[in-house]
Image (cartoon, rainbow, N blue to C red; front, top):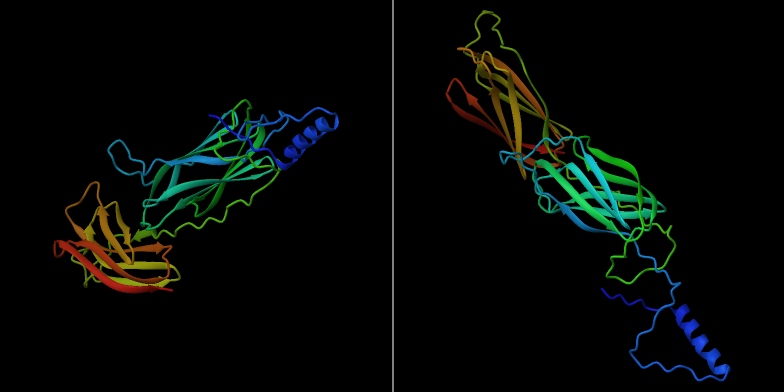
Length: 322
């Protein structure tokens, strides 16, 4: 690739001065045809600005059966150096399922490389999945650097930082299609660390009672006394769900309440988890807390399988999150 380096005004002044000196000494100046190339003095060393190229992400990772990974392992980082180049790999990154892109940006503060990773979303979903994310930083001057890698962690609900020291070897050629910039190697740019992650509603915890006995007959567990009752209570950005008189197997392992959110619809599904069922049913109270709800009006649809009617039943109510 041929690169043309534009002469600065200082160099142009030096060329003109040299030509003038030749004239003063009585020698005619060299005439250069228009468009002819000139060789820049070899002591000119333009400074290329380090920058990120080749942002890439894997998309939602799938297991061997083709299912999406919902629970990621610990975040892992791999930094690989080449002449004037750093390759960054972030494994097990948890982000929204419907993001547009994952962008890694760079700012330089002396010998500190500040990398910030953030998701770009237009229409987000109420779910997360696991990604591998890569980027390449080019035009790094040889030397020792400290790399600070920032990202928003959905598990801890806060910005996390990974730090590692690296050494960039020399010998590479600047990989730039842009003219070089001049300045001091210590020139800094503001770090884009103002991450604004999308709030993700989720079921934070669920709970259920043991088999409920009737006061007048401690040995009588079934049928339930009274109809199913669903009570929804809003506290801040949280929704508390309480299902009373739920009828399930006597020997269940758990009563799981899961959430599927679509815009302003919160679809809660309650189901029993069984390993070794018994030939009996009894009454339970079950509860769950949904957190990180954005302010607004929602329709809550709570569905469960009712042993008494042997069909799925749903309770619907509208709530307002202040």
